[in-house]
Length: 309
Image (tube, rainbow, N blue to C red; front, top):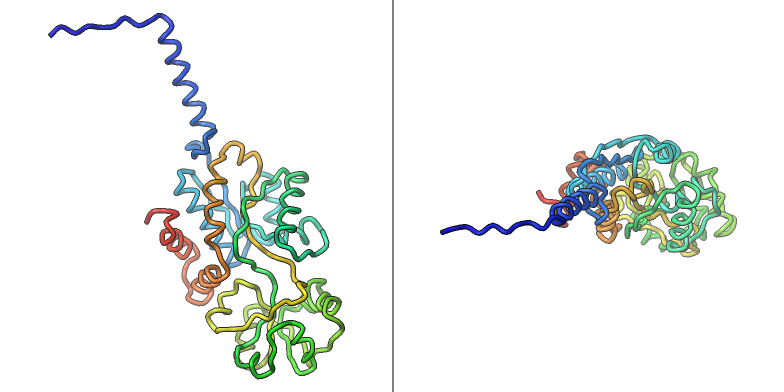
């Protein structure tokens, strides 16, 4: 059978070339929200268990979305991580809304989670050209915890209850809690002057053992500490809303997001999955069961269908 060849129009070839070039440009720039295969996203974290887990979680999620990722975890405290982000040494890291409000922006404490998020989102963009993605469900705020037995014995379920019984109670926590505005001085201002039986300054890693051994009645805690669920502890209700919210979210350089808009879609999918109970369990797996943060993060992401096994 004889083949019939159609002769191309003289303008068809240039249009084909233009179409191919445009497709390459769109693909390379990630305009449609897809991963840019030529980009390397540098993910940082601060220097404690929860941050290690979140840093690996962000990195694994981005890799699952097709990005190349460089991990720069365990940078140090907030000032170090913030400086690295501003200097362009990393592209993103997990930060807490309360830390951003008080430590980075130097603002007064606020109790409404959405108000705090809105302020840090706006101020970070205006001052630093940094973007806050969606905040997670969990709140790693400071808190006060008791054993369930001691809470029941004394009828203490709120911080107001604790204040009313303060002269019978030993409170254990880090040395700085005795001096910080968001520690004892702030509590006394918010809840009224009170005097404890004693304040025991203690290494943070020994807080819960002191509580379980009966050396303290109340300990300074954080909302997502793994020990809270593992030891069935009671978090005292902050009934006057003294402690500010500490919801976590990825903070991203605007330049990185402009070049790789798919970052937002990938990481925003995590926000509703990270509840208080989930984060407590993940933290416990690392801090108490001595598992590797990356393994714990990967297992969770596979279980939730964010990445493939």
